[in-house]
Image: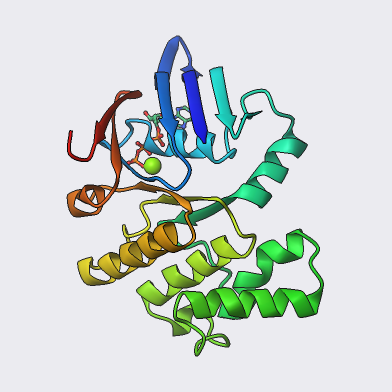
Length: 226
Ligand SMILES: Nc1ncnc2c1ncn2[C@@H]1O[C@H](COP(=O)(O)OP(=O)(O)OP(=O)(O)O)[C@@H](O)[C@H]1O
Ligand SMILES: [Mg+2]
């Protein structure tokens, strides 16, 4: 379970203090599908990055399964990210010179997994996203939706418990975007992965169990059916 207590993130620019997050309190249950919506600059990525251990709050507490992230050392935060979290970004962030398989292997290289195990796991994850027949293609030889599926496979290699997707459909047309969301949703259901999606797309948000709507760093929660 993820719990945020009075989380605030500020940036100082000259005399001005920007509240990227302003006293955020929330709880996310294991296996929940959460959508984060809100205008540009409202704090969506800041919130997702803090939950994913890519960033730390200025004040407040972040607890994941009882482990405190707010005051964690860099080493512990990177272990948390590598073990528990899979990130997916709008721009895919794939290495252009690597094949699909090699791209998916990258986190396993960082985790110092042996070559044989690495290739087997990367292939398993590519098959899971329906790309078992595209392992030797470079990103430029794949469609946008396929590139995003490679980045999803890469996010799955370490068997994460939490998937954080920052506008995963932002660079895709609506049909490909819907396919990506339904793939993420099936992982959420079948593997009981906690799924956190930032989206500008109302129909994506409508599929979530809970919607966190952010305005000027303040979060409002809407649960389905309420
Ligand atoms: N390093 C930084 N220094 C100063 N201000 C920052 C920094 N990073 C983010 N901000 C500010 O914090 C606020 C929240 O940024 P954030 O990236 O979380 O927005 P967002 O909701 O993800 O927006 P978008 O939809 O455009 O991606 C913004 O007003 C932004 O200008
Ligand atoms: Mg953002």
